[in-house]
Image 1 (cartoon, rainbow, N blue to C red):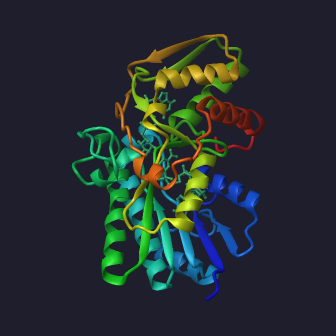
Image 2: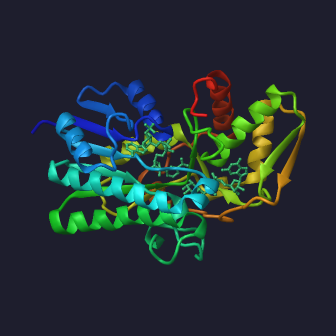
Image 3: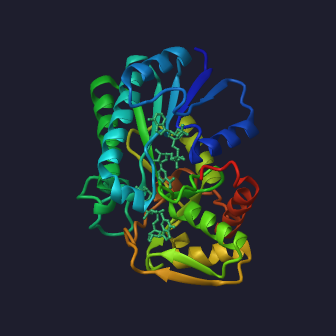
Length: 318
Ligand code: NAP
Ligand code: GFB
């Protein structure tokens, strides 16, 4: 039987999608055809538009990245939109993958969807053990339903639909729009603009105390491609840096100051929310499969992300 694959990447124009595209282009595998989509190809909230897209490309495999995605503040103000848009997209992509005989779908959860009250480190078995943090309950429940649907498609139809659980992701081609961005692109744009205007104060929202694990998008891309080719459990797998790589928002701000060689001062605006204090995830399951995987050094990844923005700020998603 032909082992030729046609891999459809929904959300291919985003942060993670562009990283996968860069890794794939460097590999040049001949038996794989990769198709990277954006919302211009189809609104995946629309069943018929999604069906037409699948009939056009006839994918054998799907990496489902497309989602309404945002940082803490965007989630806090749009929980209903995050819930409904992501439920619609996820249901259409999985149902149409089943209807058109897609062999494997890898969808994307997030370490921020785990129970707010939990012991640490969190692992793949804990996803449904209690309500998520109130700041992003809409996004969290929509993402949790991917795991529930994967299990239902496997039990009723034997579908190999699985999911990965990244920690916070950053890198080139991120979303830098202050209304919706995550902390790293938000602070990169902010510090870039301060320096351009000759300012001397870098205001960071919150106390700076929350802890996060950040994975470089190019590292996540390599892991995603491995999951597509080699991982065949329906159960999710966490794709995160080690627990020891967790940093505080203050440490992140200091890394950015170094990367920009900024000489001014950092100030914390404690009137703004901190969100989840921590969501420390274990990558033990990943390490069992890939014990020698090397993550890019955080300072190096931050420097590359800052340099990319300096070169591309005019065309970046601001
Ligand atoms: P992103 O940069 O915001 O990109 C989102 C992608 O989804 C874009 O390609 C966008 O297309 C597409 N999209 C959005 N709405 C759509 C719609 N209605 N129909 C079709 N396409 C639509 O997101 P990302 O950071 O790469 O995230 C990718 C995946 O990783 C998501 O599932 C997200 O939940 C997950 N994740 C992200 C993080 C993180 O820190 N970034 C952490 C954990 C998990 P356009 O370009 O046309 O808008
Ligand atoms: O990346 P972020 O917005 O989301 O990080 P989460 C928020 C943390 O960074 C909070 C601080 O502690 C904020 O106080 N922060 C400081 C800032 N300055 C800024 C800034 O300029 N912009 C932003 N955005 N934060 C998200 C979830 O949680 O994690 C999403 O809400 C998603 O659903 C994402 O899954 C991966 O890490 O707090």
